[in-house]
Amino acid sequence: MFYRVTAGAGLVCAGLLVFNALRRAGVVPENAVTHAVAPFAALTGLLMVTGLYLLARHAAGGLGVAGYVLNAAGLAGAFAVEYVLHFVFPLLAGGTVRGLLDGATGRAFLVTSVILMAGVLTFGAAVLRSGVFPVPAVLLYMAGMVPGSLRNVVPEPVYLGGLVVAAAGVAWLAARLWGAEEDRTAPVVTSTARA
Image (cartoon, rainbow, N blue to C red; front, top):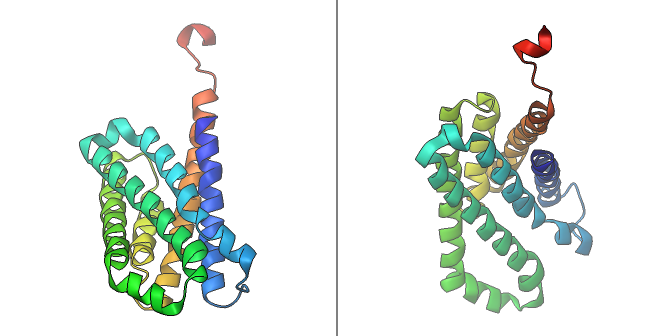
């Protein structure tokens, strides 16, 4: 059941990544509802990454632990950043927001981005080495999340394209997690059962 819950979270994450990209591109209107759901891509992504780690933990080794901790911390930080961007900054005057971004808040956002990117790359490398997940799915996740973690550094089209690429990888990895639950519940056929 656990892997299916994390797989479901991954599918929601993939949908929200695409939804957020469409909203930022102007395809989906900006309103209170579309802003309210935006932060939850990071939160559901954190749940899915936990499932990925638990499924691959034995084969991923110490690199997997380090990558998971960094990736999870980065996603938790990204949720906090998105929460502030969508629920706090809109209530503040523009000069106040600029002052925060030019000071400690902006530095904290940057540190969060670096931690997320380091976590994605480290965790991705560990998961690739484990051989538990499809290589193209992991590569899509890594390739999309690098620009996705650098939202204020890369050009907007690169950031939005990264979200869509990451969504493809996340959906594929979620499908693998769903299948892992089926693998665990399948009856084991022993030699005595076949006789």
